Length: 399
Length: 234
Image: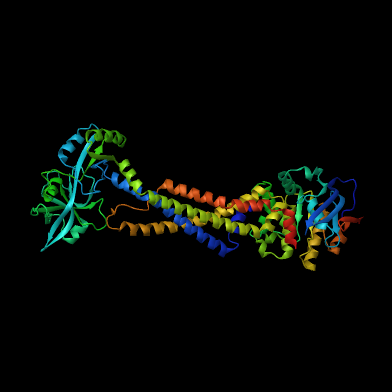
């Protein structure tokens, strides 16, 4: 380390502690904002992709023009659709999903629940937390979310009574089924506290009076390898033109399109943050350089090169940005966690989705951009320092 | 003390130096054709009333300002023929500067201030440290090496500035009113230090109002109104 090159710029930061502290606080806030915007810009998208791929099913099949569970539209003759899908050479599993409102008896009252019909051998909807999973022939078993288990209350081994919905238009009486709780599960797409239950696909079809029509809300499809997904999607589209068939990448892409304004806003706010950082550091460094013109002129007089002077000023700017930036990362992480808790508690959003997802590459880019910003902020003040007329400045200092 | 020795090599030569400044729309003639030759080992005082051009002459001799006409040679190198980078390098390696207001970096310690020109000259860390210790010892501040410049008295700061000026073993030391900011006693100690430097063979050119300092040098250049009125050898 050399005195003029490295030590002095760092120590100079502490010559005016209040001023440096205020500038650092400003950089900290803007960095926190930048960090949160970076996490937010791609966070929900990354989180959504992770959620969709969590169980390894790379393809989603849904009614034409919809995404799974986007509307109440259903796929007819799902048994035949499933056989068609399974006939593709790359497909190793295909499971139908069905979602509908059901009720559970609790004393004299009915508790409104969301019912999932699943094929336990090919499902991408839940993870067992306690108890057992259903088996493919288990037409008397049911899976509960933790919320439902607490509301009823019931646990593995208990019997619960589910009632299918009454449809006044068709005037069909509700179907009632007594089912044994096999396990407590976490439904991956549920919002926080959502009361959901799951049973065999055919059981839930019965509860919804849709067994005859053999309808499903969606199908999840697993192919041998991720690389085969795109080609399999193309083949399935050709085989089933009346259905919407998308790879996870495409689903995420469509999701991304819906979030385009969100990302633009993040980009704008992030850019504003960087702009404020540049202004803050430039202003501080310009004031600092103007105050120290005498010192700088002395350095130049005794033979210190312009390059060393410029490097010192820019290093000081970069150090200020770096220190403020580090504090900003801590602040940004804390605010991201806090905001994520608020946003993910909104009804209708899967609780497993995160809005602020750290991604090493994005964070590295943000850090690099911030550092470059800090260095660039020192360019104008460094230019001032380098161009300071030695003799005139020393004459002014002497008077 | 060094007297005029014509057999010694010339280390500093100014030829017909003129310097004009624009001021309030008029031209001020700070120097009007000054010629001066300083030989190795000389101790030269430049004296004269305020505004006579002493400091301007020193700045031109030190290559930190450019003359309107005329030329300066340091070790036979004409400064006006150097690029900025070469001139900066020459100031670093061949010239030492001592200013009236010391101009130390306040965030650095005494030792770091002395090391600064050596670091710029790319000397190794150990060599720098050893030389800084040696120089601070020479100026009587060995025990203050680790103190920040702001923790030193005026006299101590000027001693550190002198040590800094000596760092790269310059051919000439140029000092501008080195006792101007000091009380009489402290100023005396700086004069003693300059005398010792001269006795040790340093070439010194000192701009001063201090008659005591001028009396101790081997040569006094009297300036008046931008030119040399008298050049007397002791």
